[in-house]
Image 1 (spheres, rainbow, N blue to C red):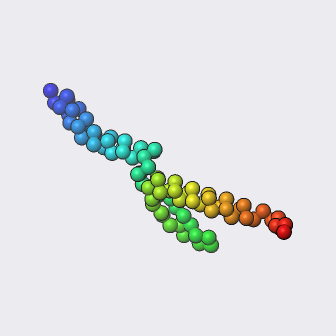
Image 2 (cartoon, rainbow, N blue to C red):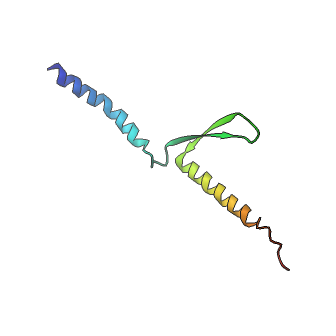
Image 3 (cartoon, rainbow, N blue to C red):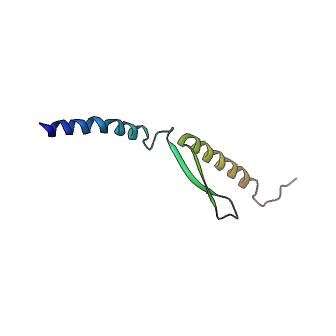
Length: 80
């Protein structure tokens, strides 16, 4: 009689934890993601945390700025 009650109790206690894990699914844009960033010339790293959606926006902005910079650095002299 005790064993079924213990199993039932474990299922009830484990349910909120499972729900929390599901909320932090890998494709959830609101999950917290931390990265380690180091400054050039420094041996120290800094932990920076944002949501997945914020990191996506940061990465897209960095890619756009890099492309703009590289497009202007072709090495060719403009004619005219």
